[in-house]
Amino acid sequence: MARSGKAGATRRFLEFLRRRRLRLTGQRRVIMDVVFGTDRHFTADELLAWSRRRDRSVSRATVYRTLLLLTQSGLVRELDVGRGCVVYDPNYAHHPHHHHLICQDCQRIVEFESEAFSRLEDEVSRRLGFTVVARRLQLTGTCDALRTRGECPHRSRGRRVG
Amino acid sequence: MARSGKAGATRRFLEFLRRRRLRLTGQRRVIMDVVFGTDRHFTADELLAWSRRRDRSVSRATVYRTLLLLTQSGLVRELDVGRGCVVYDPNYAHHPHHHHLICQDCQRIVEFESEAFSRLEDEVSRRLGFTVVARRLQLTGTCDALRTRGECPHRSRGRRVG
DNA sequence: GTGCATGCAAACCGTTTGCACTGAT
DNA sequence: ATCAGTGCAAACGGTTTGCATGCAC
Image 1 (spheres, chains in turn yellow, cyan, green, blue):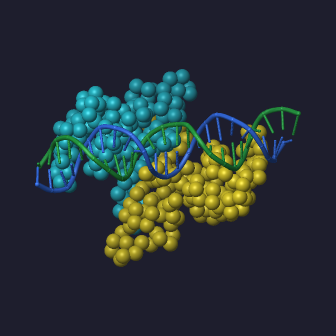
Image 2 (tube, chains in turn purple, red, yellow, green; image 1 turned 90 degrees about the vertical axis):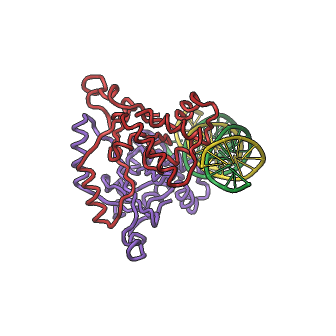
Image 3 (tube, rainbow over the protein chains, first blue to last red; image 1 turned 60 degrees about the vertical axis):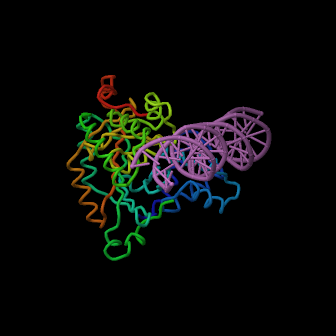
């Protein structure tokens, strides 16, 4: 997924902060830049490491506190891949409807979109009288190519978990 | 969903134990009976409380260890409803393809099935060269009726979280 | 200057694990 | 008799929180 949206995402987050009358601190700026500067999924721990590389003063607590704001703004999504492993996905700013396929063989997450899934989601929510505010569709699978050819093609295309 | 499958689920779990050459202990029997005796979603903590009511000797560790076996057998599914809250769903023995709609208004989980979702899952997995071994489809939504009429109809139909 | 935001370290909390004992096979 | 299964309590690991200090506004 393209990272062309860095400036846009940044602007939208600044807007979010302003609307809530929250302050733009140095730490928040560093964390925000790191998050919108990648299109990879990342863990809170990775985000801490990357942020500290730019500014040693960034603490773990602030990373968690800022991740909360980022998810509340809708620009980043929390992705629970099971077994207590949570990764964050910065690609919702520009692809708000993608889903995830988790490869058990190589531990990568492949993103995919499906018009049909969206349509079915609409149908189901209408049938049950709901307005869907969040969706989580995760398929966990094993790689056919690995089994038949001994190599997993998603090793290059996917994104690593954690 | 009907709880008519209690005997069947029990038989299938005993088969699972036998195939793995695992032992049927008193504690495992109690936990199994409790799990297959309800059609509600439950937390590990609730399962511990219910089990201890029948047999004081059941420990938290054994509950967790048995839950692992139950999920591995495919008869029970772990449902991560976010915020670190995990509930277990005993209804997979007879409805292995249902999905979940979580109502933000009343905190209930409504189960639904969709043929079309299963077909789309097949399509996506074929497209990406995967064999799907697990699926997680959760829709989180707000209740239209609550907004327009002031009451949530799922309050009676759904199952409580946690 | 005001009071939100921060770093630090301790607390938290659901889950897992090491160990010596128990009991199903 | 064997060794998988157990209860207990300590450990674990990611996340949150209380508090004194710092800094955006």
